[in-house]
Image 1 (cartoon, rainbow, N blue to C red):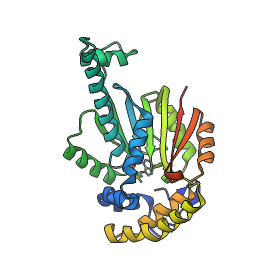
Image 2 (image 1 turned 90 degrees about the vertical axis):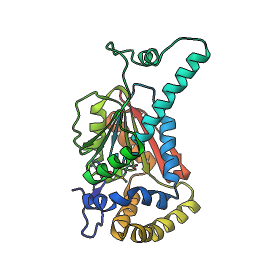
Image 3 (image 1 turned 180 degrees about the horizontal axis):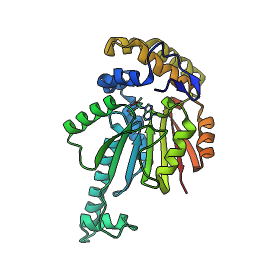
Image 4 (image 1 turned 45 degrees about the horizontal axis):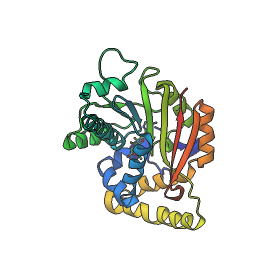
Length: 277
Ligand code: SAM
C-alpha cells in the first residue's frame, strides 16, 4: 500500500503502511492514550464542539480507524436531541422527538431522519477492533463500518453532511485526490473537517515536542506494543506533513470555501474546516 506522505517517501524500513496499522490495531487505543497523555481525547472532543452536529446529520469518518470520532458524533447528536426535547417540555410545548427531528429534516418529506455515521478505513484490522469496541460500549444504532480508500471512496456523490478525517490524511499518498473525493461525496453545504498533527508555533514548545516525539514515542511503541518501527514511521510522517497554511491552500485548491484552521495545543494539532457550496 502507500509508503509516501505528500509525495515524499517515508522510511518504513521494510514495513508497508498497511502493515503499520495492522500491527498497531490491537494496541492502537492504549498507545494513543500513552503517547498523547490522553490529550487526543480532548482534541477529538474539540472537533465535535466545533462541528456542533444537529440530529439528522450524516457523517462520513474517513480513516476512521477504531471509530473514536463516530462514537463522539453519535453521542453528541443524541445529547442534542435530548436537550432540545427537555427545552421544548420546559417551555410547555408538546413537541415530541419526532417533531424535533422533523424540524431538522426540512428537505426530507418522508419522516424524521436518524443521524448516521459511517466509519471508513483502508485497514480491516482497525475496523475490526473498532467494531468490537462499539459492541462493548453498546453503540451500534446508526453506525456502519466500510473498508475503503480515501483516494477512491466507495460512495455516491452528494451523500454526507459532514466529512471528517482525524489523524489520517498524512498517511494518504495523493492528498489532493482524497480532497477531491471528500468534495464529491459531500452534499452541497456539507462540511469538511480534518484533525491532523501540524507545525508547533512556539519555538520552545517545538524543541520539547521534537525531543519527545523522536526519543520517547518509539520507545513507548516498543515497550507497550513491541513495535519500534511503526511508531518511528508515525513520528516521521508527522514531520513531513504540510504546515497549517500550506494545507489550507490545498483544501482551497480542491474547491472548498470558507477554509479556516484552528491550532490546538500550540499547533501540535490543527483542525482545518471548509465547505462545499
Ligand atoms: N481516525 C482515527 C483516530 O483518530 O483515532 C484513526 C487514525 S489512525 C492514526 C490512521 C488511520 O488511517 C488508520 O486506521 C489507517 O488504516 C487509515 N488509513 C491510512 N491510509 C488510508 C487511506 N488511503 N484510506 C483510508 N484510510 C487510511
